Length: 552
Image 1 (cartoon, rainbow, N blue to C red):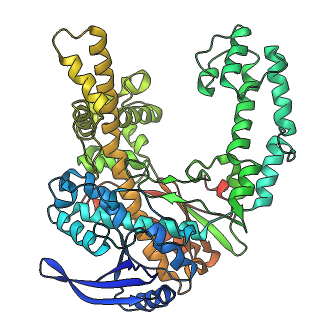
Image 2 (image 1 turned 45 degrees about the vertical axis):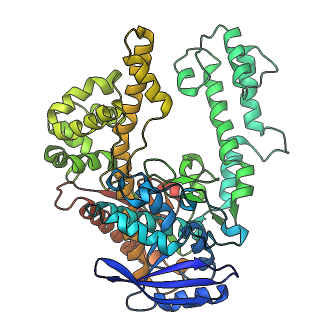
């Protein structure tokens, strides 16, 4: 049973119950309730032996207010996220949904929870019931995998909202201590902290520029050249290759300055309150399906500040990391049994060495990174032919995706998320290069653009499918954690943080062993769900720690 939530003009909510009727859905009940009655009604319906699947326009708008009233739901359909997938998928390209003119479902959110408004007012093209039925008709054209992706994407939206609501446990005093140790005491506004200022003094002295502002790339480049340093840019990895007395303090200054800018006192004051860091996640925020974050830099949390992530008294953190996720995903997608065997029960890269594909673990890692990201030079390029001989199905899959991208074709993930087509300027460059009389420079530029797009499609199929596995993993973890307690979301074990292939659960210490088992079992479940019968071993390493810094 599905229950669709729709906003009413006077501020109420309409609940439309849909049940499967043969090959379609039938409306069996329509109920209008005032907004204040919605949370109690949903709470009661969630306590049924078989609660409904809630259908709403946007989880990020509807769900936070329910969580704030102590109500969580088991399942939902996020129409906006699902619409975006169906609109772009090659599997539904001929559907009425994909071929329809642009509608309200294609645009950005018109409201946020903070505005106190629901997402969509009823309109001819914004009716959630009609949109849901349109999506279901589009799904009928597919083999079933895409339906699994929509369910996983919607479950991920619930996880994202719940993690924002629960927050990451964060000790502001520990963060202050970390900053004081590395940068010096908190400075007055507009001033650098003492240790950063001291390091700046070393840089200025070594370059003999007393007034240098190294935070200005143009000014820094001028100072470097004035000191006889031939640098192509001011990026740290390029500067690290230069031998000069100014380089070491400059790199240290840049490292400390990054910490202060990204996670310094201003960040702490803005993002941490009442012992929690509450970032806003954006499911499907990256074209491959990976998440993004809106402020706070949750997906770029540096190791320097992870010791501030501390469990509450009587609680602990259970952190699980999926080992070598993308190469394992590639092996499962390609059905490469040799590669699956190499990763079974242990380190995949070491298994490649044991299989005789390469001599060292580092060679295996560099070679796989080259295969998945298109590295054709250096150690990656040198190892790729050897891996292609040892694991032809896996390497062949990404090579096929790359060639498709170079031709301007779209590619899809395992469950059916489809890549965008290259833009008009790309196609124009390819057309002009193929004309009779096209210059060698024009042809070379077009080939470079084609190879670049091929690198994108090569990685899209792997990274996107890895994102699908991670969503399935989290969905399984979430549902299993719900069985460990009967209270509100934060009364028991709950997901607190997610970073592509790593999750953190904040849990009472007594339940930590059960949580660790859940994280491992859910990883295996996700593998079986996406790749039934595959021999690929989706391993996770689990750590039970009081501080996130101790997880690795």
